[in-house]
Structures are given as C-alpha cells and as structure tokens.
Length: 311
Image (cartoon, rainbow, N blue to C red; front, side, top):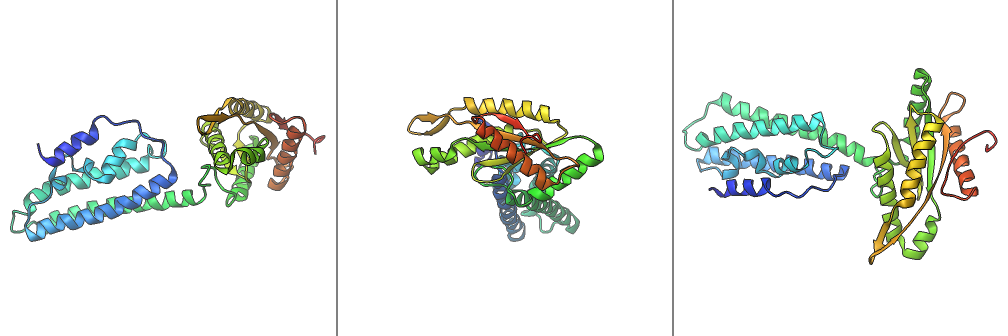
C-alpha cells in the first residue's frame, strides 16, 4: 500500500468527535486552504513541465482527502457553521478539481504534451475552488470582526442598526419583538475572589449557554463587561419571560470550573421591554435596563418585564 493510501486510511479511521468550531477557526482554515492549493498547483505544474513522477497525494483516487482542507472538511462537515450550502459547494469544487488533477497528472509527466484544452479545464476547476474559498473567507471575516472573542456574542458595533431594522420589521409585520438585558449578579465579587481568569471562564460558559438557548434568528450582544443584550423577534413579553426564566434556572444550576478542581455557582438577572412602535430603540433599551435594575432591587436572580410603574 502506498504511503499516501496509508495516510488516507489513518485519517478516515478512529476519529474522535471534533470540538465545535468558531468563526476564527474557519477563517484560519479557509486562508490556509487557499495557500495550500496554490502550493499544490505549483507542485502539479512542476511534475507536468519537468516530467517527473507526481507525488501520491496528487494522483491518488483519494487526493481530495489527502490535503489539509479535505481532511478538515471531512472531520467538520456536520459542524453547524460548516453544514451549509456554501461549504457544500466548496467541497464539491474541491473534490472535482482533485479528481481531474489526479487523472491528468497520471499522464502529464509521461506524455510529451497534454492538450491545451485539458489543462485549461483543470485551471478553471482550481480557479473555481479558489474563488469560492475567497468569498467564504471574506464572509466569515466580516462576521468574525463583529464577534466578541471571549464570549462569541456580537459586539455593539452593529447593534443599534440591527435593532432599528428589527423594529421596522416588527412594525411592518405586526408581530412583537422584545429586547432584554441580562446581567451576571455579583460578578465583581467573582473577579475579586477568584481572579480575572475565573471571571473570563464564567463569562465564556454563561454566554455559551445563552447562545445555545437562542433561536437561529435571535441575536445576542455583549453590551458591557458582564451585561448582555438579547433581541428576540416574533415573541410576546410573556413568552420572552418564560424563555429567559428557563435560561435563568439553567445558569443557576451550572457548575463553573475555575481551576484546581474547584467550581462556583453564578446567577443572572434579566429585564425585558418591547421594541414597539411607541418607543425608539434607545427608549426600548432604557426600559429593558430599568426592568433589569428592578430585578436587581427585588433580590437578583429573577426576570422582570418593564411596566410604566417601573419607568
């Protein structure tokens, strides 16, 4: 068995379930894939021009698995960030180019000349893969630039504009939209007692719980140090309260590891307000913040809906 085929068998067998990907992971991989295939094309051309036998990872029937991108995609294709049509199209283009390249490479180093049209087809396939990879890279770079690196929540950079868009959509459709403020209780005490590394772990795990509980069209923003803003379209105030109450209990029951085999418990308070026609985005956020303050005043670790009495 050729070394490249042994490598294919090793990569395909006995894989451990991969860790969930981040936007930054995908940006790095797509950037590496583009550079990798530029180098791969140079090696392919060297074999064809200099008439030397091509490497096994070029001629193998499994060539699309024997490069870094192919192996990475095979491992992560079911990850939520990868399981989408754009990545499927990229993977198909990748497999297509390697199959064509393997077939052509097997004769290019032996034949005195290969037809121009056959080489042009290969170049077109490489160009298609590279173009698709660059478009995906640009899209993920844009998203990653708007994500808080610690929590994975969106930053405040585009928050107001996106909330204005949701408010206008709510007015057109007649469906309610809620904003909610969530704030970790006594978070300063966590930092002061256990250190900022423990505080970062708390923020990371709490934000992960928030993101996991949200629907695909909900949005989570890191509003401040330990404060988060939720945008919850197509939901009533009571339904939002019930959803955040479930999330509050989940946070309350979490055991957050802080090193040395130690764990701590944290709680979170929430305030909800409608993003409706009678209020601007700024007013809705102020109302949600006032409801959050009322939840804190009432003893923390609770969910409060804004009412005029609170205001």
